[in-house]
Length: 343
Ligand SMILES: C[S@@+](CC[C@H](N)C(=O)[O-])C[C@H]1O[C@@H](n2cnc3c(N)ncnc32)[C@H](O)[C@@H]1O
Image 1 (tube, rainbow, N blue to C red):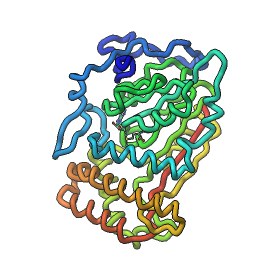
Image 2 (image 1 turned 30 degrees about the vertical axis):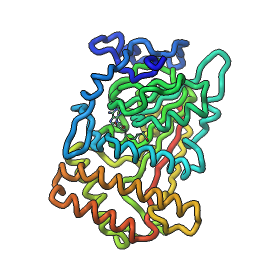
Image 3 (image 1 turned 120 degrees about the vertical axis):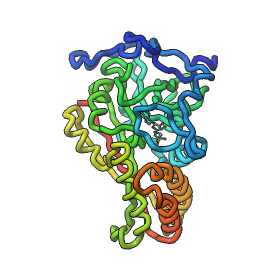
Image 4 (image 1 turned 90 degrees about the horizontal axis):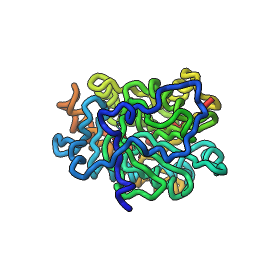
């Protein structure tokens, strides 16, 4: 029945439900046979508006303590879904880097489990759930924008990822975190909790966009696309000054190493072309479609700029970036991926 697969949220005010599994390093391989849905209740349709607030004609999350700055409305959801498809093509058709198949290989008598942080519209989870129908997927977010009718092996939940997860220690086989660096101020602080829920040998996979473009040939982006750089520099300083959000995409491998809880850390970057400048027809098509997503991103970021010291220049900064993605060949976005095993 559809009601079984609607959004879920922790039972409020009940410690045994919201914090059922205290940190316990002594029980790292403990796995439960339940589907781990105790202690959560279905979110009713009339509660959903509470999770959103409108500003300047766009819809944002209403979660007071979360720094996440982007809108979560239909336009932004279209961008997230589009980006998901393009990223998959950039990764050669894969949904994630790393030994995913090996980690999710069936185990007699036990169900594999995957947790997706800041799941958004849930596009990654839904595609993974189709490829791995016997694996159980949990997608968590602070806004209920994923479908209310997911397949049987998917549960979408409301959860703030800076809080402790409700899952047992060692209960999860794979944690996936994509484009979540703006969701938290201290990415390093998230890692011990990810490590706690992962079983030994479990897989953490991250995928984050660098917060400034580059030139495919390694030339100086400041000289070739100064307005693009001005846009990103304004974003970076506004995010840091107004929301305490740091630029960490390229530092995640080091943060994983520093946590002391992960091994076999493998980092890899991919260049996504912005625009139809590549000679290779496949990359040209990818770049052409990606440029559309970049335009949506620039428009979503306008709201961020309006909130800081660049507010008076927000429209010029956005337009400057959009002009250059149409006129400067060779621009790329850098996608930083990393995977690591729970030690
Ligand atoms: C840029 S989107 C990425 C969505 C998805 N991971 C993807 O790659 O398609 C970031 C998502 O993180 C969610 N988010 C922001 N802050 C969060 C928090 N503190 N806890 C959980 N989710 C959060 C947002 O609501 C948004 O859906």
